[in-house]
Length: 111
Image 1: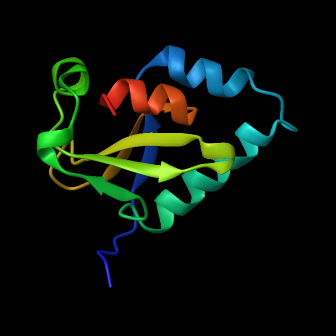
Image 2: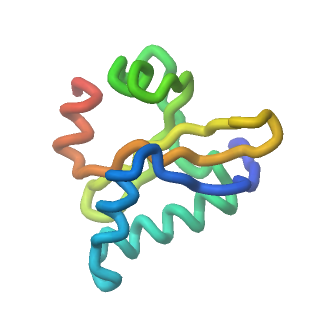
């Protein structure tokens, strides 16, 4: 059995990412899948698959100053990438960094 912990919230890493999410149609399969992922992350912030530290792309470390990374499977081979953060040492938040198709996921991670 893996870790289980309710999140205090789920936030987007930057305004552009959130804007892209909000611009999706309510009927879009991707928006529905992302909404489900957000609900799942609120219920258990560790619901995704942990990415080993040595496999975290430098892009994420440099841009977001993170030391942990998780991926959550979306339909059609898409992935949601997030980090678990504790900004004030009391709250635990899921920080959504990206979501993309499997091809772009493989490119980002160098697979």
